[in-house]
Image (cartoon, rainbow, N blue to C red; front, side):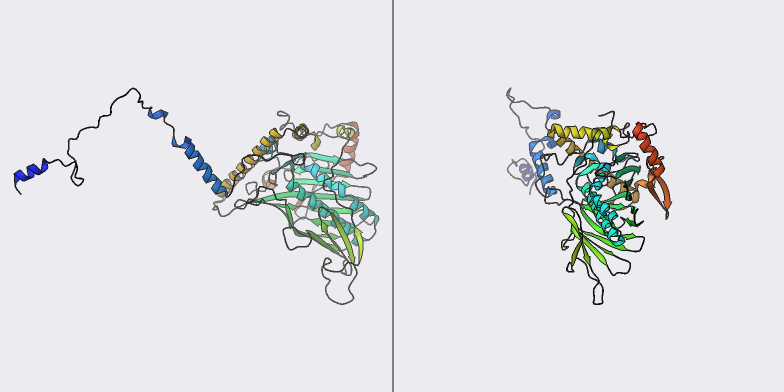
Length: 492
């Protein structure tokens, strides 16, 4: 090929041939200018995150991640189920001097936790019947029935969440002609409640500590009630004791339903008297194959007699007596044996019953009583006025703050313990028991502190109780602090 041919080749028009490079000099495209065409500045353009298409795609992704249709509105609040207030979240979470609520925030009842514990006095007729009998085995069986009712009250606290008590808060019920017993409950430590139920024929005392564990992936709350208790009967001088160690209350919510599942009680513990008679209380609500949610077997020391207790928490507790077998061999469960004779038919429990107080009784209460909590009174007034819109907003806010707290505690636990996300157990208080970093009440109002077996326990102080009732008649509460002043009076 000659030079002239190459020059002719380079001078050819190559715009139609895509294999050839473009010429160095090309003509620019001219856009005709018109007054109808305007260009917006770059700063005023809509970002991608604010477009409607982007928002719809993000909402669809969130709905897919949730595994179903998300809830768009807050469910209505009826008079039976109340809501949580800002006080419970602001003061009961991440404070050293106030007990962290061991139960998940599902609903809030317009009552204090101590007042909810006072519902056990509705079952005190069981102890009155135990006082009338002189058989220690029957007294132990009656006591086991009363303890079962107490466990049922703890289970109810997991379903309808009450306001957790502050340090130094008290609750009391004075006796009358119909109910001659006196009930006392005091928050002696951040996570310990001392309870006393005193009657002319018996004296019941209980130290209650609630510890909780949260499993992050399954959204599962497990509450472990611990603490020793006992009842002393004056006529027979029989002392029946027990400990809640080994008991657990599980709170969970199914993934495929928006309904809240009630708490289930599982575990077992032993009650025993001073003669050697003992009984095993077994709770099996999570067991789908169990015939009854609980059963108890109370044996005498020689294993020649036993009393079986079974029934339903919401119906009644029935006691049956089984005589010794003529044939040798171990005695089977009383639930599987034919019932020979009813020995201890207990009254039907009334879980929906409420305690009633007179105005004169409330005026004689000390300033530490739960009925003077301004947040509880505020909630009761809101429910009476039927302000459902405000209640729904407060309930949704409580749920959001509770979930945020759980995420914060879970991330802090992973950072502090250097454990991976697969270690999903959290006790709801930063994996540190409240007793490890909180101080007990310096001067309890009714109870005194003592050490037994290396454990700190509390018992009702008879001398302080007598002085208190004298001051109560004179309405002299100079030594009673006001634990609610620093938290609720400024807001309510």
